[in-house]
Image 1: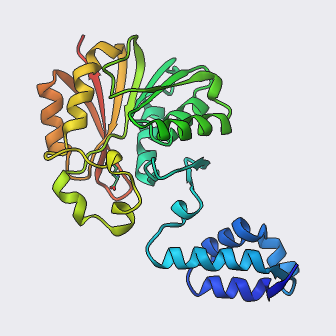
Image 2: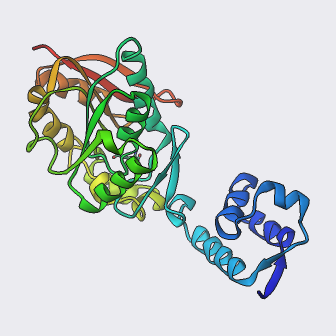
Length: 278
Ligand code: GLN
């Protein structure tokens, strides 16, 4: 096998572009090298093929593509999730939703969970792992996203308790749920062009665009929520950092009650917790 660089040389080359943790991640992905190999055998040769792949990855990274898109995976709640161009890249902010659910359901487990706009399935799969007695339904308009959500459910061993439905929000669903969750698209259409390149170019527009007022998806969710949320159930929705006031108004107009607003680590309102007055 032709060798063109030592491990150390390749690592140093990657370090010119990436911080330590990411550099080790890239080496592991493309050359199967661990942090221990790097210490024990820094002078061993790396096959030319692997070097070529790493160089191509660095070029992609330098033109603005996030590593999570290059390797099509992202950690969420400490679990590895597969991604595709059809899914949003899970954000750490969304872990606030998981924390909020855990707080609410610390004494009893939700048994029926509904995730509207499931994308990679990261929210539903995480919740099903945390609540081993629960069953869940993940809904998405994108069949390609649902394929990824299904494979993430399998990967984390919750697929026997998860069903995936291709549908436009909750309209086609029947049944009652104890817990409804969603990270819907909430960015105002006009703002999308101003987003960071790595969001605008690599996250699917379907997962971002909340219409002119950013509220279209919430309105769709609220139109079915009363029918789908069981008595005593709760709904947790991610919101944009500046949407608390708008959402509070919409929740009231839609005749739901706001239980709580949960902040992210930057102190921005990030998740609204809702229940129904029925
Ligand atoms: N949180 C994402 C962002 O800031 C948007 C995701 C969404 O619209 N749900 O880019």
